[in-house]
Image 1 (tube, one colour):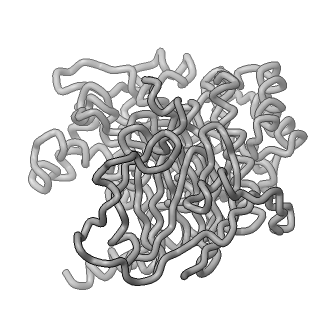
Image 2: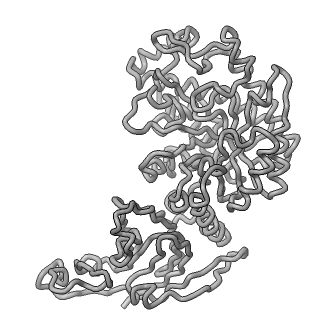
Length: 531
């Protein structure tokens, strides 16, 4: 048993090392957008959409590769759309991540060719426990696997011939939001045979969560076949994406057995060639979903990252920009990508363009991988975070917590505020984002701070109890922190900070805080002093 445990630890350590090495060759940061599902189904679509993506400030575009359009006749491949995507992306100086819409897309087998769909005897479907066939190919069928594998292998070989140095195509997604619906697992005859062979019920039980684990390992083993082919044909980083198990749903109500955070060990066991499990985040609780997939350094993984955060899909909205800043600041994310960015309104894409502009500047300064960074993300209910950094206590809040902005109290929903906060040195910070305010205190000063109710002019309300110290009868003791300077800066291509203007007076509330207003996108260089 001891030898088995050591072997398993060694396997996970090897997996983690390979993943980190492969990911280190990616363009970083991946400032991406995913095209809507039909945006690259003709050369005319591709010609129109790719230049628009560059104009939005993206450096990478996630583009579907459709099995049904690539192999409309079995054994006859048409790579017209793949070639056009690579050629136009190269011209526009964009990278591409292809999304293999093969056997499954959002659980369903809707992108398989007609010859595949119509031959259910040769390519059997998954079934519910009641025996109902679904529009989901069974991953237990070798015929399904071999057909999918043949097409995917041809795609990887062609990409290698078209882009041998990986100048354009930098990563590959295998399948899309894989998972079972209606049932936690497949109950087709082939699936039942595998289930009994594994003696799964004896090992894990018979409830739906045990069924989900069985299905997760089975999907992962299927994906591993494709991943190995990718390694042989054109080695590049590989990932699988997951639809979230949200809103209290049970397995089968969400796509059961996908590459979900609670199933990571089964996916790593079944598909060790996969580098990333990636969340598609559409629901509320963005910070919580990020934390589940940003799995940090752990001794049992040999000091390697178990899973680095990459968000290939997120709702494209006015809050997308600050969410990107949060992901990079808090988790040193590999990349961020709003979905259907080609169909989004200018109001929605503006935040992405602005945030990506700031992130590119921070990348110039090589600060995006800093271990001394934090991500801030606030809304109307979650609007404060206190950060302790050595002898500095930073109280970070949503900009609308300030008393004088009428938008804070006009009854409308607050737009999210967010930023990346980076420590450059003692009493020296960069703040990049929108809609945030930060004050700085020593720990003793924070402990003794006055509780004040402020009026709309930013000064204390008259006659209030707020002018008294928390600890009655004690005099203030210890040191305080003051703001030495707050400069708005830009960071040029060499990583040098270029001074733009000094924030002082009203912009810092006479030295009380540093702030960036809602709708503004800035980088502030903040220096403090102690007195």
